[in-house]
Image (cartoon, rainbow, N blue to C red; front, side, top):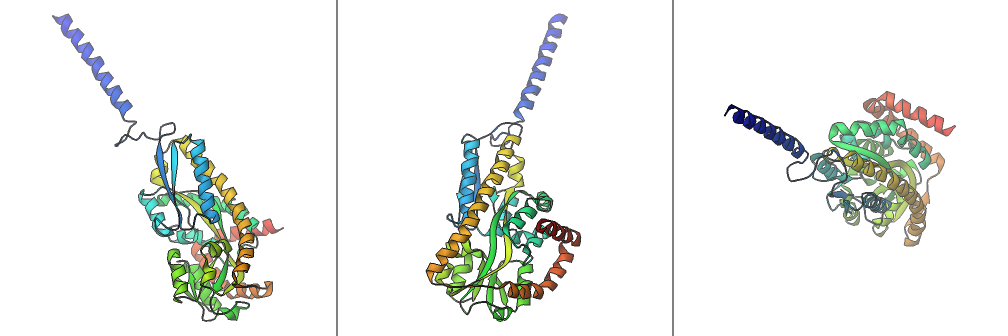
Length: 350
């Protein structure tokens, strides 16, 4: 009898160990049956939304990202695309990423200043002379440093894409000199650097969500707005604006954002697919943006909107006028960072 009892204890011991082992194996599955980020590629739906149209270079870049991700994952990672602010404006979609209800968005860096103030350095007017200068800064140590700050705010930054150089349209008169800004009610992004800079130029800046701009221009709620040429063309602002002035006053990047909550649920293999796709699609998008910029200018000329170049001399006067704004925000964003950026630009220009 003692032997039988001993055997029973041994069997029960093995059963307990087995149950513990099965329980441990089962812990690789979260509630709802989704496997954790231990390994492999899982079936996933990735919701990606942007504020611009599908035919805009950013929209085409997002479609390229979708193509790359679905191909590299063997169709397991499926990207659902949403355009034209279907899921809300940049700020709303960024908040959705932070809460984990949306996976991807690609906003301009400007609205992110409220989350990571240092992104404001890219809003400095007349900072970059060429797109190539912007590439060197964004893809270098400074750009990387800012992307790394996003993780503290439940966001992951994978790459920079291009929005481009911004130009002014309005319904009153062409802008040839700094005096032509005086009294113009211009829609701007919800960004304090831009607002203060336009005030220094004599304009009346009016912050407004991107999705509301066309209606505001049409109803004359505002006189004008400022955006890259591809955006002006794809959103048909020429239908409600008479003048386009090529001020090239600000270069705006896009930043490719992923929800940290979603990112942390991915396996290293899945993360690499998204990271590589964001960079590869970004290179495609930048090139497309630059081609579209030239093409958009030619197409805008055919619409009847009156287009004028702003001379280098007048741009220099505008740059001088907004210098106090740069000095003010350099202190806020970090003088060391600002000095590092301008130092890098000097090296690039040599």
